[in-house]
Length: 176
Image 1 (cartoon, helix red, strand yellow):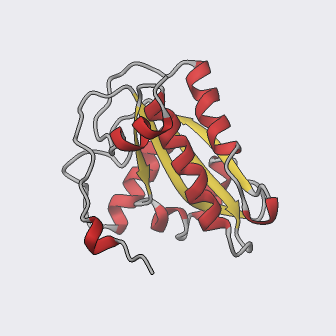
Image 2: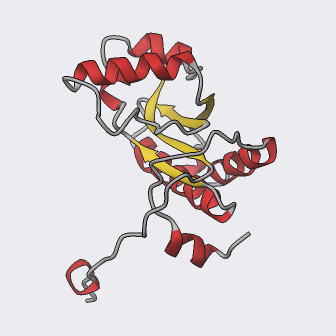
């Protein structure tokens, strides 16, 4: 496994995966990284749903996303055919759930990178998961009562790679 610093420096969004499935140990380590993330007031309100990339619910969600966006994305489906997609849901009424889910999904993405896997953080299905079929998807994705979708992560073995993004520190950082 690589260092945390290397995982941070090397990670970029992966938008193409091989058909190789994740091992149970890889799934466990990625889940543990999310579960270990801090939450506001230690609420631990994030719920994780693991979905196989060949699941029918992903195909249905893709169709609904495309319907709301006026057509299919020419680059492929929202999870880029990853063999595993993690959906993070959280308490709808808790003010900090979005922040907590963001922290958890970043932990998970960095763990995937440390394991030599690729990942892409997904928000583009938000409208479909909060739309007229929200209750249907919440049940299909085993979200607990009173929880809704916050963010997702697709993970798999990299078929394509991309350089991590560059940044302009002078533009992005103020030191007072």
